[in-house]
Length: 312
Figure 1: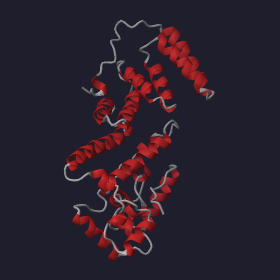
Figure 2: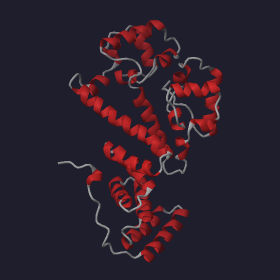
Figure 3: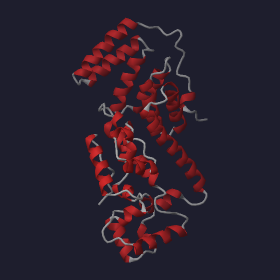
Figure 4: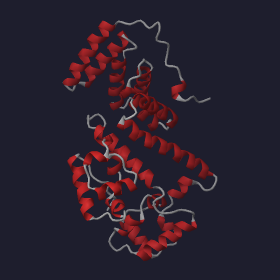
């Protein structure tokens, strides 16, 4: 019987033999190696620190973090689990463990880690941001399970758009937009389709009718596209020390009233949310014009980000 990772007791630490002095010595040596960008030596020293003091949360976290970056995911998770088992739970350890669990599809465990963080730090922006992704992933899993008996979801989404009865003009436009499958089509909005050159209302109406017959609609897979974009940004920033940029609230940008209202309508709360949207999505909001778009683009550039781009 499969177990939820957090249901497994990591171990009883009451009788653990500890040599805190030796652990501190190796931990200090690891920090010096990190300062010199020598990860191999840092990992070796951190292993010695953990061996000397098996419940040193800082050493466990640092070793897990380095191994995570080196691709040793299973060992990293084990170390993060040991780290957060030490009271008080290590906040960054919980955060990284949540990310690792989500990567493996253990959404319940990821959610529990994040809730533990938010119980201690209710305004932890990165935890709030990632909780949104985890909950969306859980909902998507439920939806997929519900849809499985209605139609084979993955097979349907992978169906080439050329298999559907569309006019030559509509098929040609979709090909130029790099929309190859039904799944690609569901991750795009009416505004984004119409933003392409030579794509008109006639082709849009034709496509919408085709989707309606199948009980589908444009944009229903949009949150999946946003989630993938946010995850790509998190991966890009991982280990750079700039992860907090994505968790900054859009209120920090000091936008105009019109721009703020548009972002509120889209439920955009953080820079990570904002960067997962496209220009066409924003322009599709009522009363949102070129001036507001320019304002938002400039603010994102100041933070080293940009709006999500669709394939040309």
